Each structure stands twice: as C-alpha cells, then as structure tokens.
Image (cartoon, rainbow, N blue to C red; front, side, top):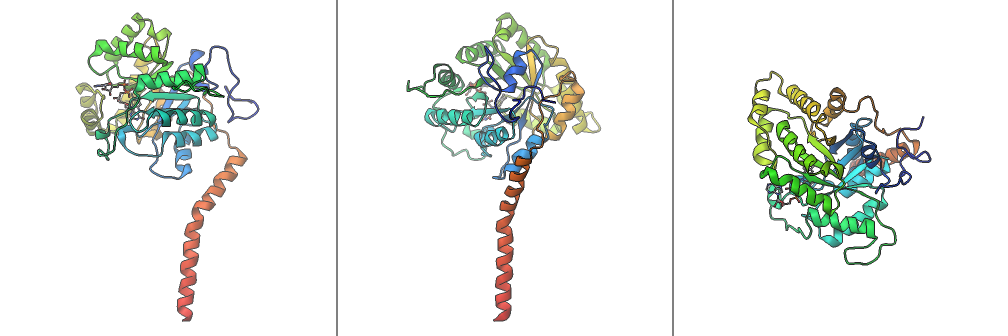
Length: 366
Ligand SMILES: Cc1cc2nc3c(=O)[nH]c(=O)nc-3n(C[C@H](O)[C@H](O)[C@H](O)COP(=O)(O)OP(=O)(O)OC[C@H]3O[C@@H](n4cnc5c(N)ncnc54)[C@H](O)[C@@H]3O)c2cc1C
C-alpha cells in the first residue's frame, strides 16, 4: 500500500505540485489539509559519519511530519544543517533546513538555498540566530549581513520572482515552504504578535515557537494572533520539549536566550520522585493543553538528548489522532550504500592493523 503523501514512482522523490502550494513537500500538504502536524528537532552530530544522522532520524520514524536540522544552534559548531538535510532527503525524510544569519552573508546563503532545494529540501526556517557570545567560540566573527526578516524576503524573491537579490535571473527557482521562529514568552509580550505580522509580511508561511512551559502566556499570545487574523495567514506550531530535571530547567532558563520557565514548573519537577519521567509527563500535559488552543496547527518537539522519548510523547498526547506519518521503508539500494560506507569507514582501521602486523613481522625477521 502506498504511504500517505508519497510519490508513487519513488518514495524519496518530490510530490506532484498542488495549486496554492509553494513546495513539493509533505509538511505543507499536511498543514494545508488542516491536519495537526508534528515536527522534531534532530540533535546535530559532532561527527562526519552519515550514519549518525540516519540513526538519529530513525528514532522519529512514523511519528513526525518533518525533521528540523539546526544551524549551529547556541552558536556552537556541529554538522551543518545543509549537510544534515542532504542526508535526510536522500532517505526520503521531509527536512526543515534552518538558516541562521550569524555565520554567512547573503551570497553564501542564496547559494545554499539553491543547493538545498536541488537536493530536495522543501522547507526553510529563517532565523537571525544566536549571537557568537552564546557559543564555545565567542571570538568567532559574527556576520549578520541579513536578519530573519530580510532572509525571508530574499528567499521569497528567489522563489516567487525567480531572481537573486541582485535581480539576476534564476533558471529554476527553489520550491520552498518558508518558516520563521517566534517567541511568545519574551517581553514585551504585546509586541510579539506584531513581530509575527512582520515576519508573515516578509514571507513566513509557518512558524515554530520557542519552548512553551507557560500555557496561559501562549493562550494570551494566540488570542492576540487571532484578533489580528494572523492564524489565517500562517501556520503556528508550538515548541515543546521534555525537561530532564529541575536542575536542567534552572540551567536552561538562566543560560538559553529567550527560554521562559515559570517557578511552578521547576517546583513540580523538584517534587517528583523520578524527575525525568515527570519532565516527560509535563511535556505531554502541555501538548494536551496547547493542542486545544484555536489557531495552533501543530507541535515542534525539541527533545535535546532525550530524542528517544519523542515517539512516546507524540503517542501519549494523541495529537496524531491515529494518523501515521510517513516512515522510511527499507530500500535495498540504501542498504547496499550504507553497508559499503561502513566498509569504507572501517578500511583505514584494517589497513593500519595490517600495516602494523606487517611491520611486526618484518621486525621479527630482522
Ligand atoms: C524553533 C527555534 C529554532 C532555533 N534554531 C536556531 C538555530 O538553528 N541556530 C541558531 O543560531 N539559533 C536558533 N534559534 C535561536 C534564535 O535564533 C534566537 O533565539 C533569536 O534570538 C530569536 O529568533 P530569531 O533568530 O528568529 O530572531 P528574530 O526574531 O529575527 O530577532 C532578531 C533580533 O530581535 C531581538 N530579539 C529577539 N528575541 C529577543 C528576546 N527574546 N529578547 C531580546 N531580544 C530579542 C534581538 O535583537 C535579535 O537579534 C532558534 C530558536 C527557535 C525558537
């Protein structure tokens, strides 16, 4: 049986274009159909091994509609979001390419957008990005040639006008669904929906929020968003994530820019016998509340270093209502490539052992 939103000719290929859609990807289809969507953030590996990406993506198999590839979040270097998305699209996953303006200028970014779209990336999340001071290399040179607004405009122009920012023609435009980040929890609160309106005017079609640990604040934000009619112009996905312990929660609220965690959340974790389990249940409870807020179109799960809980969280919150998102089916060609890669990665070690063995034999003969 064909899986939902799958190209019948090739499961990893793009979908047929639909009227009114910007992309040829699954995430836009699900949101436009009015189904509650689920995306998850992939923990980017500090390695050059493609299997680290495949293994981390496989944890989400059948539970999410899109996988976000972060762009040096927290201003720390990891495998690039373009690299991760290239690997994910190869396997047929719907990837969401995050682009931060901190490390690249407009020339590099426009090239990356074309390259990513050519590789099958259908969703881009446009971010200004954390400052270099947040990371472990604070001496790095910040670029910020663009910001999230001008980045959205740049890609919208490339997609809709088939032009670079300079006006030079593109022979084939990128087919991407454009997203941005929102933070309903950062003061000044009344200003936040206006910032969303600006992002929508710049080209945002979907937004993913910062972690939500304050449901009443999210409710108040969405009331304003609905009053301004913004929920009719853009899909709002609420960011959620399990907290591993009260200590982690305290660390996050002091060290992660823009994260707001009320005291009662920390007290609930402190009072629990098993804080990790309680953190997971708290995440499910929050999802159960936010899914009922009018205008929320989905959740974005950021389960940093607790990705193994994502399936359980999505299952137990019942947000999919029995819907089973696309999952990767074993493909014999992928399997062959994976096995060959394994051999290639193992080869230098074998060669070293053989060389060491040969050298040992030679020494013994001397
Ligand atoms: C879902 C999600 C994914 C993210 N992924 C990444 C990533 O991959 N790489 C990365 O580097 N960062 C990432 N971030 C962090 C994000 O870039 C910063 O939190 C940023 O400050 C706000 O988002 P933005 O980039 O869209 O900024 P914008 O909304 O464009 O804001 C730009 C400027 O507005 C001001 N501003 C915005 N928010 C605040 C605030 N809370 N307090 C004070 N001033 C503010 C700042 O001057 C900031 O430079 C992510 C955030 C979210 C919510």
